[in-house]
Structure formats: C-alpha cells, structure tokens
Image (cartoon, rainbow, N blue to C red; front, side, top):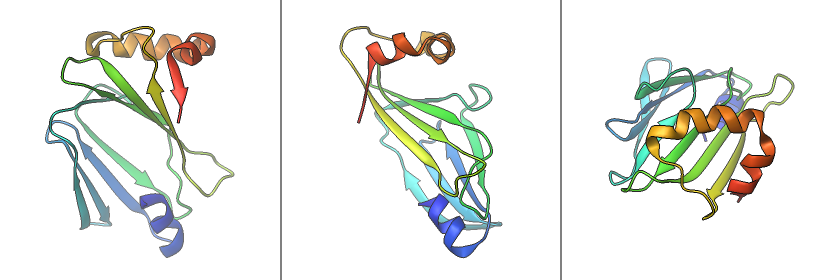
Length: 134
C-alpha cells in the first residue's frame, strides 16, 4: 500500500513500525495519513538494523525501500509462526514481499530468533526445511 502510493503520487512516504505499541503509522512528509493497529496478543521482531522496537522506513518516489528486512511474528508462547520478508530492488519499481509460514518440524523461540535468522540467511537449505512460502 505505501509502496504503490509512493509510486502513484511520485512522493516519498514514511512507514513507522512501533512494535512495543503494536501499531504502524504511515505518513507523507510530516503529515500522518493512516494508523494501523497490530494484534496485541502477538509478539513481533524485525531484522532491519537492530532489535529496537521502533523502525522507520522510507519509500522512494519509485515505491522502493533502501534496505531489505524481515519481520517475525510469534504466538503468546513466544514460538515463531510467520515470517514476512520485504525486498527492495534498484531496478524494480515495486517492493517485493514474501510471506512464510513456519512448518511444525522445529520450534524457534523469541530469544533465539536473531541467531536463527543470521544462520538461515547463509544456509538456505535449512530455511526451506523450516518454512513454507505462502
């Protein structure tokens, strides 16, 4: 949605993820245009630059983001259930998003997700054993 708005309007858009407040804020320059509330009973973790709970993304006027990242979604027991990956490409004018559902073969806890993410970025065979693309 933010990506296509940037492209259609030829303007930069900002998306702020506040994972502690469990909300997403979309803005155009300094004007807040939309706020989306995330489910309160789930736990979220992003891999953008650090494990901070606030993440601000800028979308170019071509509808792209500067850096790829993923968000993991955990249940109440802090076991990972979903992964959403966001990819930006220099030549593409659209943001690519892949959704994955965790297979039931190997539980991954919240406390181990960063190490798991780093290792499966290097070992894609293990990644595809653990996840199913939706």
